[in-house]
Length: 139
Image (cartoon, rainbow, N blue to C red; front, side, top):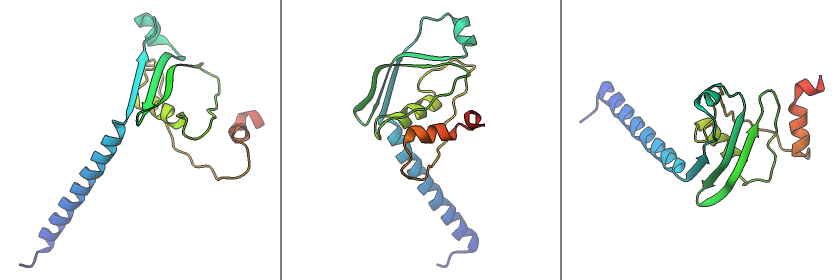
């Protein structure tokens, strides 16, 4: 039997939905390969609600069975600028993604966003690339 245009479109839409569901499942399975634990600070509820700094004590992040951070501390003070530098595969991107996903708890007044960014490879040291990106410093 020959399919009508409407039937063909419906079949294509169903196939696309199945492919999208499979891709979502793959992504969901990947997310379960990460484990995050965090010790909450001894702040009062009011201090937590009004905090403007990120202060995470004793957190652990693992990915694919490999511990990237164990009992680590992260302190980010409002108004300061930071660069995250280190060898490949040590957890820099994972840390930032876990912060953005809300896996590491930060005070509710703080928004954490993660933006992927590509840098053209060259011989410039990573620290110099970070310093070059700070346009306020070079003005």
